Image 1 (cartoon, one colour):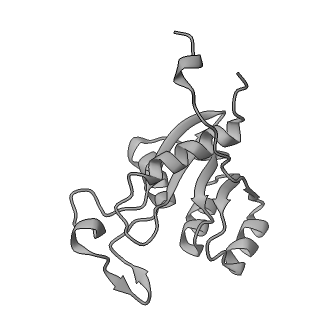
Image 2 (cartoon, one colour):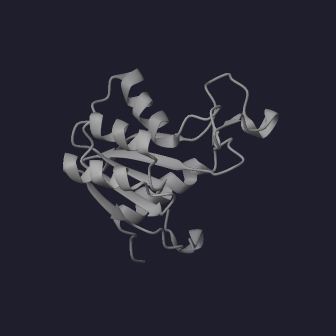
Amino acid sequence: MTRISWDQYFMAQSHLLALRSTCTRLTVGATIVRDKRIIAGGYNGSIAGGDHCIDKGCYVIDNHCVRTIHAEMNALLQCAKFGVPTENAEIYVTHFPCLQCCKAIIQAGLKTVYYAMDYKNHPYAIELFEQAGVKVEKVELTEQEIDFRSISV
């Protein structure tokens, strides 16, 4: 059996996290990695204990749901909450980060953004990543069947 690449592994983790999303408009997952180790994960959803879009509907202002915290922000805030440094870490995101998440990623000192799908790729976000020296790479998740019977215990 051939092992999947690190990029595929971490991107798969982000897609798995996206399954926890409570947003009805778009499900997004993000995994922050340092030295090939997952240090945080996040998905887009409401604040802890708050109303969720799946229960109350989206709260849309200017074509943007303000009830939702983005996956990248949730992952970064998890690092902040538990005192985990993000300097020189990498982030794997199911979708290209929005402009606000782009700025947070840069300020947090992440060095690489891997994303699976284009999504409203803002030209200024691309410019800011370039200015900050943040590497951006598209890594599409390739589906692979997992045969649990072939794994020896």
